Length: 331
Image (cartoon, rainbow, N blue to C red):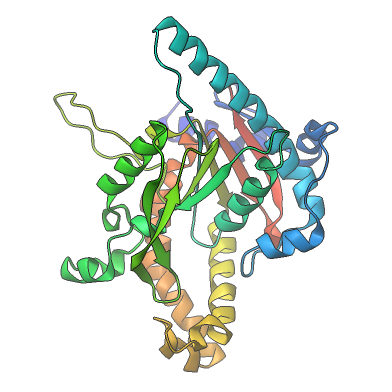
């Protein structure tokens, strides 16, 4: 088998099209099969609540939550219980003082794939489990370097690429969260001004579950030849999800979102993209395609898509933002 053939055999999309490969690390489920795994888990979100959770140009229906996200929430409940049991057993064996250790879920995927909506829906569902666990949601946008730093380093056109993030600060944040520390402070990002907000922070204090959402959360770095310890963001994850879709679709969704922002947020005088509000429909479409071709597309191919196979679960979207395939890593 050639390297290319092996790579294809490990791709969940190919597995779905050709029949599940014995070499694939994933079990692939169509929507009908996956939805049956919900069993009797009740629906805890109303239509009005879903409307508040969905993102711009990223609709989600009650039916989609019932078919996809309720089975996922049930699966995660088993992972959380198993991880907690393992931790307590290990702590007893090592004679350690037990401390609350959050279960961390990483969520990765392309720009405009719908990560924010998925993260918010999961947060709402998980927080309504019996016992009402505390579920916090943090995005990696706040860990981008401020625009002043990016401009000084010539990285404004690389915003969203791995080198545009303060990885050291993010790793310190996750280390403190995983250590069970109280009142861990994180930065806040404003999409309106397209920058980190200097005087605003988010406080995370011993959640039961933390969802970390971002483009490059599954990214790895070059390993040192001497075998020195190099921590990755994903080292702190107990479970990871990649939200997938064909590039043609996410590019289309990005263009549609750009056009809607042109009519809404871009018109705010404080918006970083205020000048785009005055573009015609044709000019705005061309600008969206240009940004995709120069920034989002290359970032997807160079940095985001290559991490897909590192996820524990791959949710693949088709047309109309509907998930049509679920691939779960084998244990």
